[in-house]
Image 1 (cartoon, chains in turn brown, blue):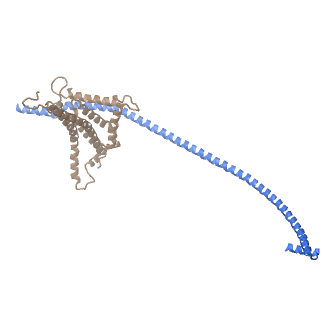
Image 2 (tube, each protein chain N blue to C red; image 1 turned 180 degrees about the horizontal axis):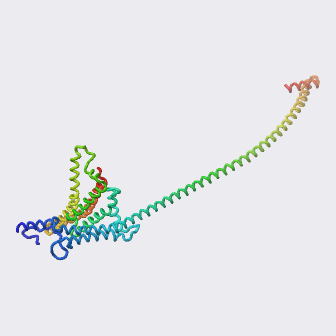
Image 3 (spheres, helix red, strand yellow; image 1 turned 135 degrees about the vertical axis):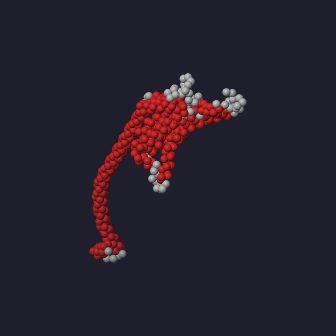
Length: 248
Length: 173
């Protein structure tokens, strides 16, 4: 599309998020191999490279790759232990799975022309719902009905407690929404803004400015990719802590 | 027709809300998550965990060994200090013994010297007394003779006995 056409600018910032079949055209069925499949597969490959291939040596004095893997392990392990407590360590592999997937998917999405799986609400909603359902189940299994004490603020005056219970209940059920929308929204917005800047780069006069803007946003996106993975993981730990120790 | 284009535009605008792709995304996501979980929990995490534990063990062992070596060094220093103190005490003892020996020798020598000096001075005193007695006798004789001579020179009658007793009285008085 020529930018200098009569109907103005033709920027399609959302086209990068389109789910399309990888082979041939047609409808996207449940088991169709799509660009989603491809980039999810790359995320699995990235996790494998990062965590398995680098640690092949099992050396006491680690090389560069192994220290990255150990750093990621230690980072998440300490987070789980600090936030969710000693009992939370049991769930460390699940939380590590979440963290490694999000971090790898986010950074893969920063490759130009790539498809960012974590920008899709369908993906983040599954992650958030998985956390929400598991945490609720863990809460009831571990504490029985005492888990409901999470909603009964015993430190508040008795009159306020029913009102607070309703607020707590609502906030509890809003958790998966905010949990998933935060991640998808942050990634989606950043990538869309980059595309918008890229669209403006077509025009000669403001092209330097647009490219400068892209570089800036890209740098910001690198930070966002890591921070959002961290935020998602630490919130998971916080929810897990609530399930393990429901008292306020 | 118009509504269809609007619908298409919205769809193009927000692929995230195209629910027809949800089953596909969710299916592959679940597959990917299970794959990652399997890889992490079966291979990566146990491996890294064991490496970290092994390193911790090595570090702990090294620290313990260092602690032991340090203790040993402290012990060696103590032994050295003790040896030094012992040697010093021994030296002091030897010095004190030597001093006492010397003092004893000195005392004996001084006593001997004192005795010798006392003997010598007694001898000298005796000699002096003898000399003094001899001198007294001579003085008496000289005085008698002189008195006799003076009396006779003055023309007095010289009575030897009277002069002698007078001189004797004079010398005694």
